[in-house]
Amino acid sequence: MRFLVLLVIIFFYSCKKKVTPKCDGTTSTYNSNIKTILNNSCTSSNCHPNYSSYTGIKSILNSGAFKTEVITNKSMPKGNSLSTDQLNKIQCWVDAGYPEN
Image (tube, rainbow, N blue to C red; front, side, top):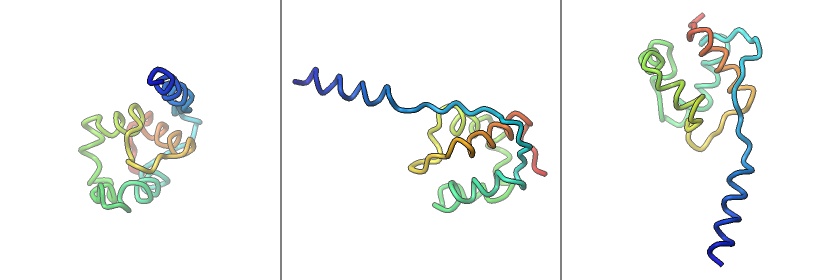
């Protein structure tokens, strides 16, 4: 019985859609569309109030932690997964070097 339960868990986990963000050519800047995504997903829950300004998020961008947690691991934002469109916009922003304007 335990084996059957384990198989069911593995089956459902393996069927989970894995989104790989791809830049679709969108010109993303912090002020044009990233700030809105962050305000709706990261600052509204008071998890990262410093993300409400470019200056506040700059150090986390420079460290590489933002890319790792949002794009690579998809572990942020907690409890509020981003849409494919939002992830693609963020990927374009990352690819462009995190421009502010």
